[in-house]
Length: 338
Image 1: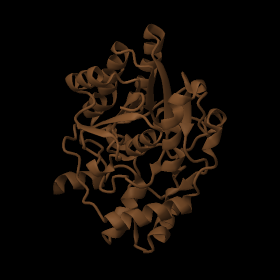
Image 2: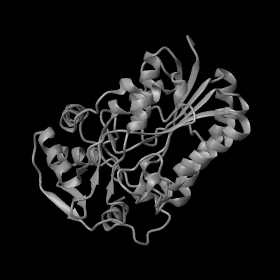
Image 3: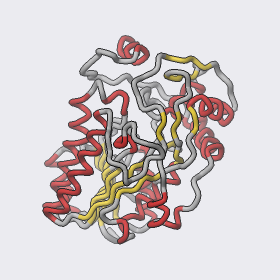
């Protein structure tokens, strides 16, 4: 490998594949580990070594650390479905918390320099708006709880072992390589997939809930560069777009980007945070080259062109729901059809 070796978990997935690409372009020796549960081999960038496997597999991870002596770890592998996490608690904690501990242990044992972790805006819960890094997290779903637990564990690992860390809290990221077939998460991908299948767009509730939808180019380059910025060590960063948009307005914007109008169906509202958007003063101070966020209309246009090229993907219901009580009816219907 030409320069320092880095491990990227989830590098065949959405954000991970873009981070891996930026690292390759910056000259790092990149090894991608992904179990392909939500990613695709074709997403792995040229120049990266791909290893199919589970980031929580202790034997696999130890073997890779022994072989490559990773200097830096980028941990992006996760099952990021906030709403569904209530009904898959065991799966959520095994994949999003215990797998992270496996990687932290390996990083400590092999004296890695930096552990970069993608957390989530979900750690804030129903906190005051806009959500800033100075707020005390109060996650409301198991996904957010698992992410915050990893943040706390990284702080403890630094205090005990000196492991440097950087935490990013991205939110509502969209763009090329997103898994269009996932029926539970990534509303923009769901909308585009529904349009390509000639189906109505489905919105939980009245569509007035808001999120700041963040283009991948606002997120991945900053994450990849963080190991080269000493001022980033030991800090938590919100990263993404500033402007909140209602899901109803988003649906209309996606239809314009796709060049096709379809009906909109409103489903019963889920128990979820209604409004969520964050401040980004800290990330812009430490990473001033990041620049202004990609405008939503432009980002949607680029993703739409890619979506039409790759085509619709058939969504797969989650196999292994642990609790069906209060499961949204539309999700329960998916299980019935499986």
